[in-house]
Length: 142
Figure 1: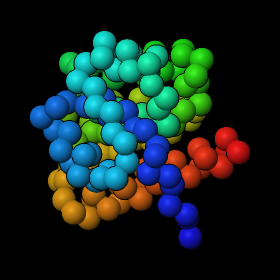
Figure 2: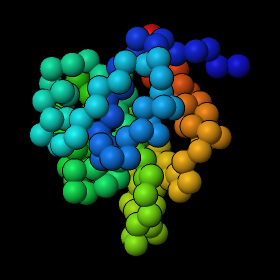
Figure 3: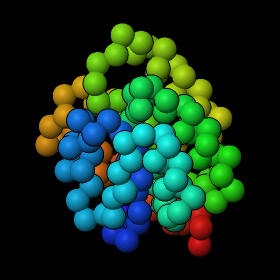
């Protein structure tokens, strides 16, 4: 059984403020650092030690890929885990899935999660995934 990751982990949430409630509810107890724009997220990347990035695919007018690139170019965060989340419908679902699959295979992104109907079950599953990723990152860094 996975051990609980430290609740002192800092998680940057780069997501649409109107849909961030699901993520906030799922991750109670962790230190959450929300960002509403790419510019704000870029500032937080340089100022704060982040253990995990959770990025909404439609973040800041669909600029999630720009933020992912900025994270990977930052020396401190070349290996910091990134989870990309889609919480809303998209007419480009298949293309998004193929793009994220490619980014995962290239080890640029760690996970892509699609949650069509956010509910209690999905909150628990999402939290377990986040805990697993944080545990793996902690094990690698030791």
